[in-house]
Length: 221
Length: 370
Image: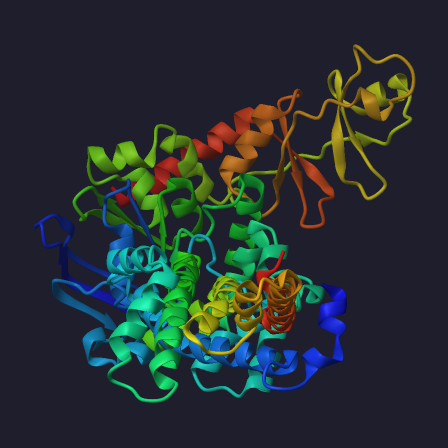
C-alpha cells in the first residue's frame, strides 16, 4: 500500500494523487460553504428568537436519516436530462454533501446560542444592547465553541462522504476506491481509503487549531 | 426620582402581577421592593427599564414618562444589576465593566480606563482586571456586576436580588460595602429582595408588596417596624420587630459609658482581682482592643489566651441600641463592651442602663409619632 502511494506513476496524469486530493477538497469546500450559508443563519435566528425550534430539530433529524448513496443516484437520474456536461453529476454530488453538512452546523449553532447563560442575555438587554447587539456581542461569541464543533463534525462527514463523487463518474479520492474495486487492485483501494482518512484528520486538526486561536480564553476551562 | 403612577401589569390569562401601583423612589435614596414570591416585585422593577411593558399606568424618570424615551437610551440611563451578575463569560473583568461605558459612546481606551478604576472602587484588587468571570467567586462576580452598572455613571440603578446568591458572610460584606459606596455616589436606587432583613438594613424606604402585586405599605424601616400598616406587614416584618427596632435607635446620645478595667494576657489572678469589681475581668491586647473575659473564680495562674471566654459581642461607639443590648446580653459579666472606631476599648454599659435607655427612646421615638 505504501509503495502504491509512493509510486511516482501515481503522482502524474489524470489520476495523480495531488489532483484527486484537490478535487476532493474542492467538492468538500463548496458543499461546506453552501451548508454554512444555509445552516448558520437559520441556527442564529432560531437560537436568538426561539422560534421554529421544533422545525429545526425535525428537519435536522430527517436530513440525517437520508442515505447519501441512494440520494446521489436518484438526483443523477433526475438531473441527467436537465444538464449537459459534468454539472449533471456535480450538482447532485454537492447537494448530497450539503444536506449532510447542514444538520450539524444548524443544530450546533442553535444549541450554542440557546445555551448562553440567560442571566448574561438578560443583563445585556437591560443594559441597553439592541436585539442585534445582544446577538453579535453576547450570544454569538459565547456560542462559538459549539458552532466550531458543529463545523468540525460537518467537515469530517463531508470529507469522508465526498468519496461518492467518484461513484457518479466524478473525481476525488473516491476514484482510487472505485477504480481499485473495478480492477481488483486492493492496494489502490486501501491507499484511497487511507488517503481519505489522513486528509480528514489533517483538516480536522487545522480547524481545531483555528478554533483554539479564535476562541476567548473565558470560554475554555 | 422614579415615579410609579397607577401602574398595572396584567398577563394574557388575566392574572394580575402588579395591581395599580403608585409610589415614588426619591432622588439619591435606596428604595426597596420586598415581599413574598409572586408579589410582583421583580415585575415592577423590570417595568422601569421596560424589559416588561406595563399594561396601564405610567412610570416616570424625573417626571419624564418612560414611553417617551427611546428604549436603548432609557436602558443606558439606568444601571442594571441582577442576581447572578450575568457577566459576559467571553470577556475579562475589565472588558465586562467597560461594556456599559462603550454603550453610551465612550471611546474604547477611555472606557477601559474607567473600568479599571471601578475595579478598586467595588473592593477588588487590580490584579483581577484580566481574569475571566469563571475564575471569580460568586461574591467577586457580583462586585464586577455592580462595577459594570456604574461604568456609564447612570443616574438610576435597578438591582434585582443582587446579594441573594452568595453565602451569608459574603452577603453581609457586600451589603456593608454597597452602603459605603452609595454614600459616595448617591444614586437613585430601586432594589428588589425577598429578605426583609436586607430590606430593613439597606433601605431608606421600603415598599412591602403582597401577593397579587398590591402595595401593602411604603415607609422607612423604623416606621415599618414600629407602625406596620396591617397584619400582613406585621407578620412579614417578623416576630422580633420590637428588638429589631432598636437597630434604628442611636445609642450614643442616651447612654453613659462607664470605665471598664482591663488587663493584658499574662496577668496574675490576684492582680486582676484588685482591678475589677466582680469575678470577671476584661482582657485586652497591646492595641487596647478587647479580646475576651476571664472568670477569676476559675482562674489559677497567669491568664493565657485559652482561658478567655469569647461569648461577648462588641458594640461600636457610633452604634445603635440593638448592638449595645446584644453586647450586654452576650457578655458573661453582663456588661456590654463599647469600642471606638479603631476597635480600642472605651468602656462598658450595664444591662439595667440599657433598658432605661430603651424605655426613654420608646417614650420619645415611638410615642411621639403615634
